[in-house]
Structure formats: C-alpha cells, structure tokens
Amino acid sequence: MSDVRTVVITGASRGLGLASAAELYRRGWRVVGAMRSVDHGLDRIRELTGVRRDDPRLLGVHLDLVDPESISAAATSILEMVGAPDALVHNAAVASAGFVEETPSSEWTRLFATNLFGPAALTNAILPAMRAAGHGRIVVVSSTVAVRGMPLASIYSATKAGAERWAESLAGEVAPFGLGVTILMAGTYDTEITGDETPVFQHVDGPYGLMHLKMERRGRIAVKMANPPVRFARSLARTLERDRVPIAHRGAGIDARIFRTVGRFTPTAVIHQLVRVGLAQPRFGALRDHR
Ligand SMILES: NC(=O)c1ccc[n+]([C@@H]2O[C@H](COP(=O)([O-])OP(=O)(O)OC[C@H]3O[C@@H](n4cnc5c(N)ncnc54)[C@H](OP(=O)(O)O)[C@@H]3O)[C@@H](O)[C@H]2O)c1
Image (cartoon, rainbow, N blue to C red):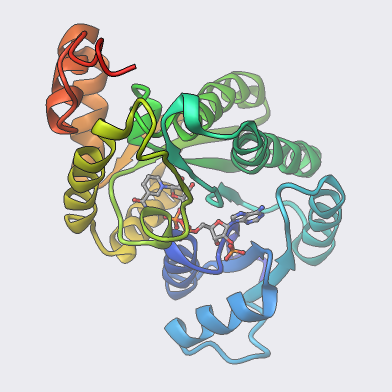
C-alpha cells in the first residue's frame, strides 16, 4: 500500500467530486471521499467503479464544511486512516443565484462557510502532517466566475475569487516545505450545482424583474452546453499526476481556458459589455424609469 498515492476529495457524493473519486480510483489512487453522506457516497463510487465493499483503496469520512467540529473530526479520521495524504482536493461547494440586492444575507454565511472558511480550516488541520511528509498537493476547484464577478452570482463569485487568493497566498507559504497548490478552474459541467440544487432568489415584481426572465433564459442555454463530469475528472487526474510546480493555475475544459485568458487580458469595459450582451441585460441607464 505504501507505493499507492492517496487523495482526499471533498464532496465526493455527486457531481464532479463523484466522477473524480471514481476516475482517480480507476487510475490506482487510494481515494478518501470526505462527504456529508458517507454510505450513500461510497455506494455511488462503488456503482461507478465496481469496487468491492472491503477494498482498502476506497475510504469514506464524514465531513460537513459548515460545522467546525465535523471538520476537526474529519481531519483526525483522515490522518488516522491514511496519514498525510499526497493530495487534498477542495471540491465541495455550494452556489446561489440572484441579484445582490435581493439575496438574503444568510446566503453570504452559507456560501463563504462552505466554499472558503471550511476548506481553509480543513487545510489547516491537515497541513502539519503534509508538511512533515515533505510533499503533497492541495487543489482548489475554482470557477470562471472567479476571474470577473458575474451578475446573478455575486456571492459565489466572491467565494471563488476569495478561495483563489487564499490558495495563492498559501502556495507562497507552503512551497518551502515541498508542498504545491493548484487552482483548477472548471468550465461548465452537467451537475446539480448548475440545476435545481442551487437556490434562485428573485422577485419578479421587483426593480430587477425586467431582467430576470431574459437572464435566466440565457443561463439555461449555457447550461445546455455543459460537459459530462468525467471530463473534469480526467483534467483533475492529469493535474494531480503532473503538477510539480509550487503554484499552478489550470483550466478544466476549453471554456474555462478561454475564459481565463480572455478574463485576464481584456479591458474591464469590454468584459462588461460582453457579459451584458451575453446575458441580454439592458444598456447603462435603460431602467432609470423603472424604480
Ligand atoms: N458544475 C459546474 O459547471 C462547475 C463550474 C465551475 C466550478 N464548479 C465547482 O466544482 C465543484 C464541484 O461542484 P459540482 O458541480 O460537482 O456541484 P454539485 O453536484 O452540487 O456537488 C457539490 C458537492 O459539494 C458537497 N457539499 C455541499 N455542501 C457541503 C458541506 N457543507 N459539507 C461538505 N460537502 C458539501 C455536496 O455534498 P452533498 O451531496 O452532501 O450535498 C456535493 O458532493 C465546486 O467547487 C463548484 O464550485 C462546478
């Protein structure tokens, strides 16, 4: 077992985490799925891979990222079960959609706790063992909305951009100990985060009502072009198997790679117009009379 590399992946119960857990298992990794519903999640990974129940290369640990005690207990279990992992993948996340003014403040707490504070706390709990091991990689799954704040996704954008900056800072601190960080930006994939799992906050009779319908319709078209999760899983596996540099920014999917480049090098005013037209939003000042 000592030659086998171990990956801990959060949110392995469904979506990109589930596909990644299965892909990494197939490639010979020992996989620790950290998730809220361990039995259910492990069953789903077994369904995809045909793994036996007693296979020591597939393990599960309970993790709820909004609960500090759960994070601490999960870290303790992980270290007891497998010691310092070779890779820790922060995949689990939640999103919400809605205009800034109309989204309840509880969403700020929920999204930041799940997407940034929880992963940071889990990392801190596992880092001492990884530093002692002198090697390992931390992967943060990001999104195109981290490059530029997107209308209707303000909080999610903020958490993903925050997670990227946190990960970059961390990379600068842990590199001397032989640890690397990869920020893996996902394009659009067919999972529940792009569907009903994500709450939408909208007041059709409110000041933004005129924009709601069109923006939603455009959003649905984008989701129809979503890729299957297994493609993301292959990108993650390649990243884990190849990245040796202290910090790497990667795109999983052609749309992520294009957006990353365009987002970084295109002037803000141009991006604003592209997003406005893409989401069928009215021009600057067009709704002055619709207060
Ligand atoms: N799909 C896309 O198009 C897309 C695009 C850009 C970035 N991403 C990123 O890719 C990653 C995976 O998303 P996905 O598309 O696979 O979404 P998903 O299908 O909604 O899966 C989200 C995962 O996060 C877990 N999770 C949610 N809250 C949690 C909590 N409090 N504690 C522990 N786990 C929790 C869920 O577990 P439960 O089953 O227990 O709810 C689930 O396993 C996320 O970081 C997301 O931001 C996705």
